[in-house]
Image 1 (cartoon, rainbow, N blue to C red):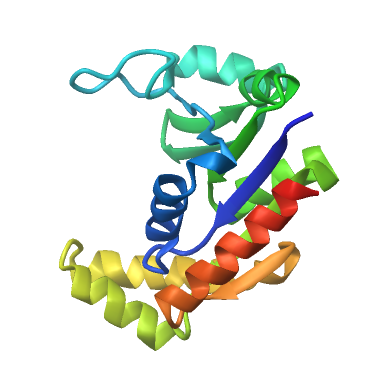
Image 2 (cartoon, helix red, strand yellow):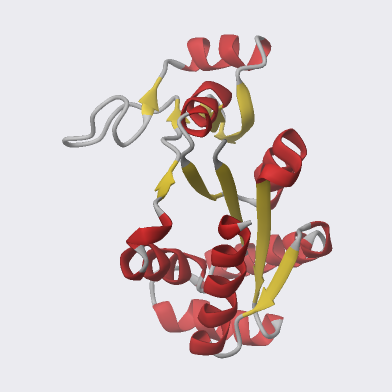
Length: 189
């Protein structure tokens, strides 16, 4: 049977950096992302089943009603994103190792569904002030969007203790080493 790695964190904590580095430096861990589902139309050269599983909003809602999603979110009215249970179960039955980059609600739902087969990790910023500084430093969002992200982060941080492991990313190298050690030990069990 395979194993699951669930990573959640507020925007600006370095979560994507940690995941990208782990996957590029440690192919021996054989981690693969789950292909998410969405109700939005494909963009550019995106292909169904490769970048996403594309469904109409109606089909997505029917699949929600049938309980086919481990987790999902309606990001905008009629625009859904989610993780299909069948996608994850297929990988696990092959002995696969699946890594997720999801919000805290999705992460907790996946952990509940798979229990000890999953390791849930929450990445925290050193402080809200440091998180704001990082978001401003990226120069990708307006001040209003940054404040929305800060407000969302404050809510997310209240749930960090529900994860198996919490890592504070105050020093990227130190956080990465702890991140890698936790995941590699879990996968070796």
